Length: 183
Image (cartoon, rainbow, N blue to C red; front, side, top):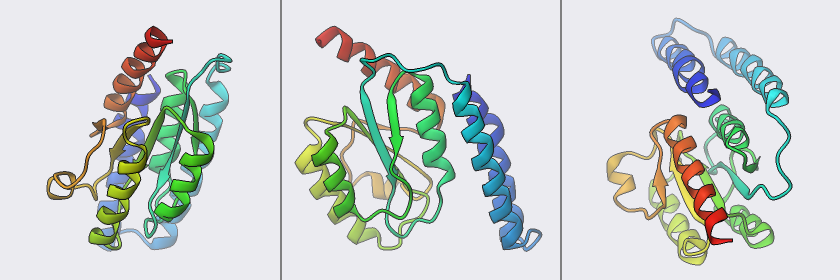
């Protein structure tokens, strides 16, 4: 599955790149170039996903402000599309106010947030709480990423925290099934 490929191959490869970068064995340009290549691969994989059904539920998501990483949200979009969701990544480095505007405008059934880095943990938690308070009863919030430590997660409410993309796929499939049953 695409989720297993992303978890076992792609994410693991970038963990190794990150470790090498931290140890000074990889230059920044090499890491950035690897990211660009991987984005192209992910876009090619997206072309292999069958067309979505007309009734595919909408999922929106992205990466919070101060977080420059975009591979995870691109992988989330791909996995959700493979799970028959009309998934759209809004990109990276997004202020929570802008995400609020997107949720008001589009009203997705699922909203994901990828957090690899939190520039301001308290500011994030404050903004996230407001976002969840406004939309959390109508939209399934799914969160993930290495910045969401156990301590941070204790301060958050969400429908699912996913350690990996296979967890996300399972949650999305179950949610989609419950939406069909309710509709």
